[in-house]
Length: 425
Image (tube, rainbow, N blue to C red):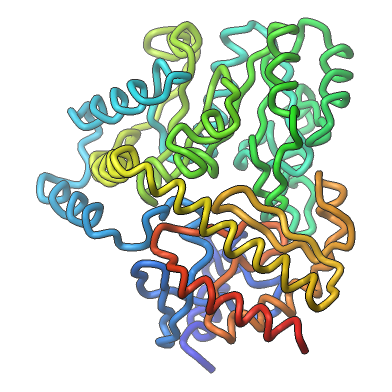
């Protein structure tokens, strides 16, 4: 028995399921999760001394790679002044100014501590601003674990085989309407069924919690038009796509302007942080400026702000990173596609820039229903083979692969070689 197995045996006695987030669980794979000791560049190292090429990137925020020197140095320097004050700090102001000055669709921003908190707060602000109660989300899109949004959620919920969640009263979700991703008619129908009642449509502009499902051409533009027509706010959940597809996130990448946007750990370079922002008149509804209450004792934590602001400034000053990530994504994901074609495997690869998924599904994956048709047993076999080959993937068919600036062409070629070896059996 390895040390990961020993730690897992200890963990299950004190932590529900042995993990502090379902996405870390290896239950669908049938083994104990790897316990990670350290990470550097595009590699992580477990407690047993195994080295892996990492395609999780801490679920997205390590866009520059793990343990990036400038970010590490900024954190160490900030720590010297103290870890937390629970008071206003200069760096919070600098972070807010930097985001608002460089993202035209964000005029004001509020720091929070997680993506879940960001989305929950944005929904409340949208309801307060519009005076409406209903929201529309999409089946398979995950927006955190707040009660109102645990309806047809994806990601860890899909892997666990639990479509929603126990402990969520029906009253919490009665105003949540569920549409079909990539199907504008489903949204139009819901808006017409509840005229003047829908506060917001919230969407992952690139769905990445049922595996990666890109928006069809015209889908995001259509949402923008429908929301404008019905006086409904359009919220982009950019917890995964923000500052990753482009500096301006999916809004810049696809050229569609949302009314509000939510961000996650990428603005903290992997530290536990999030933010939500948007038009000034909406954000001024938030307490203490307005009547929509939202608070967070440690929001804008100086250590997280130091890490995040260092990463954002680097990305802004080195936007060639985005072109490089696009090229890396094309190399890796189209390379997997070619291997599948070469060995006549009926599976599909979806990707947008550095985000991608190999679906063990025979039909094209365009929404929640087609994603759920994937063969999870086939994925588990593939995952195990990749792990043994030193490639660290998310332990779920329904999670994304993430590339970072630290993934070199050589590393990608080695990964493709392992994928080819697997499928040629």
